[in-house]
Image (cartoon, rainbow, N blue to C red; front, side, top):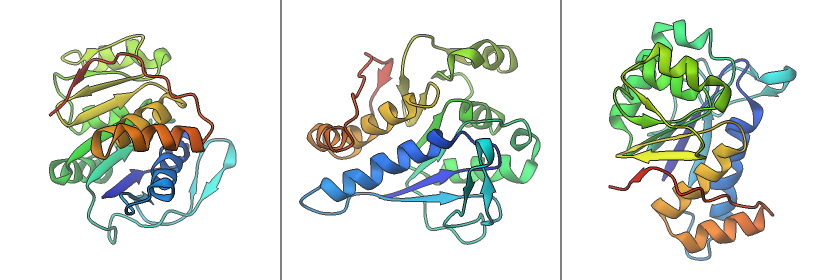
Length: 200
């Protein structure tokens, strides 16, 4: 299953690195097959400068990426991205083709701008909940949860919450046993937060 993670300048490092580590580790510890192929996508495919000058070379750009089964939008300083029609149109198109769409932190703003989330239950970083609710008042923005799973949309809180959400995705898409083994391999205390969850 192809996990396409969208990154951009000033993306939060752990918002994309955390999920990437979860899916790549899950594939390493799985004894039966390689269930996940995680890759990073930027608009052009050129080097992205994430938070604090962290430079990343994505695997692909919009023009040459593989088919995406799970689209994951990283958070960070999204103020430029949300005003780029080509980015918003790409998110909308890929979301319509993907089995699952997910966001970490402020990635939810990009999903909302692309009309991928309209009146869904969602969450984001606790600091950004008021802004998300104000900008997109039809959303039901949920507080005090690590992630929200509704239909084929999964949104998480900030930074480390994206790791919790990604482990939930491993559980949902493959098995809880693999998710537990992945968390153990990562020496990560998986926080299962009784999310608002509607599994399809």
